[in-house]
Length: 394
Length: 70
Image (cartoon, rainbow over all chains, first blue to last red; front, side, top):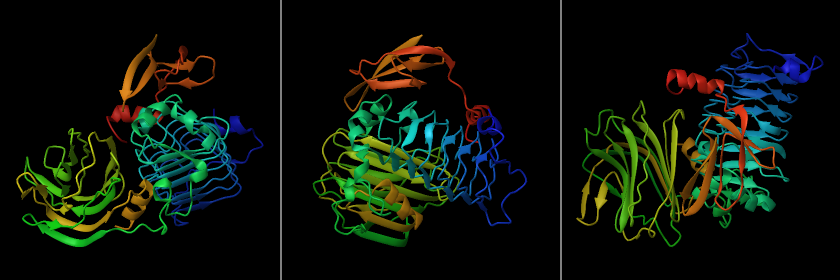
C-alpha cells in the first residue's frame, strides 16, 4: 500500500528523487509535505537535518540509510511504515509526539547512536526488530492507557538504560508479554515517567539526589603514552558501599599489538575477585572484559574493529555491570549487561591503568602499549545518556 | 503448532511461546499478535497460532543474502 492509497488524492504527496541535499548543506525543510512516499529519502547520505512540520505519514523505507542525519523534526507524524530511521548512524534523538498505533518493523534498527526515543500517547506497539541498535538509554512510552506492546524481547536484549512509562503502568510493564523477560534481566528497567527530568544532564533516579546536577570525575588522565612496561596507579578505590562507578576511556592500541595469545590491559582492579578490560590478540581482534568476582561470573564483548582506536566504558550499579565498546565513527557499538553473583568487590586495592595487577602474587602483567587519550573515572553510576554525551567530547 | 519452553533469568521463571511453523501467534482473548511471546511463568497466558507468516522485512532479506550488515 503506497502513500496515495493511504492518504487519497487530496494529500500533498511529493517524491524527492533527484535531490541529494548537497546544495542546501544537508538541510531539508518543507512545510508543504504531508507524507513521504516509500523510499523517498532512502540512501540520501548527505541529509543532515530533516524538518517536515506537517508530515503525517512515513512510507516504507522513507527515511532509511541516512548516515549523516543529525536531527529530525516530525511533530505531526502519525503513521510510520517499516524500516524508518534504519541505519541513521549518528542520529541521537527521536521525538515523535503524534505517532499512533503500531510502528512498523525495524524502527530505528541499527542506528547505533540513538539514545533517546520519545513516543507520544497514541503509540501502541513496537514491531519486530525495532530499536535493535543495542543502546537506548531513554525510551519514553507515554501511552497512559495501556502497555505498549513489543513483539519480541531479543531485540532489546542489550538495553542499558531505562524505559519511562506512566507510574500507574510500571507494574503492568514488569509482567507484560516480552517486557517481562527484559525486566528479569534488568530489575531497574522501568521508571516512572513522572520522575523523568529533561535538563539534558541528569536523568533517572540514580542522580536525582545530587545537589550539583553536573557529575564530576574523581580522576582524569589525558594523552598518556604507555610503553608496554609501565602502569599508573590512580589511587582511586572504586567501591564504597553502593557499588557505583563509571570508567570512560579513549585509547589507541597499535595495529598488531599485542602479539598472539597476549593481552593489553586497559584497566584492572584486583582483590577478592577483580576485573580487567583488555584487548585480546585473537583472530577476531576483540576487546574483552573479564570479570571475576566471587563466584566467577564472566562478561565479555567481542567485536572486530578496523582501527586501533576505541571508546570504552564500564558502569557499575551494585551487582549490575554495563560494559560497552564503540569505534570512533559509531558504526559499531557493543554493550553487554551482566548481573554479577557474589558480593561487591573489596575496595582495598586501587584502580590500575595500563596493566593487570594480581594481588595474590603482587605482580603486574599484561602491560598496555598504546596511548590513553582521555580517561575519566567517576564514583557515581552515570546514565547511558550521560556516558555517550561524555564520550562525544573525547 | 504452538510450542512452549521454560526460561529462567535471574531466578525469574518465564515461559516462551512460539509457533514451530513460523506463524505469528495471538494472545487468547485479545487482538495482540506476536512473533513470539515471553511471559512470567505464572501469568496463565495462552496463545493461538494464526495463519499469518512471520515476514522477513526487506532489510532482513538483504542481510540474509549478504550474510551480514548491509
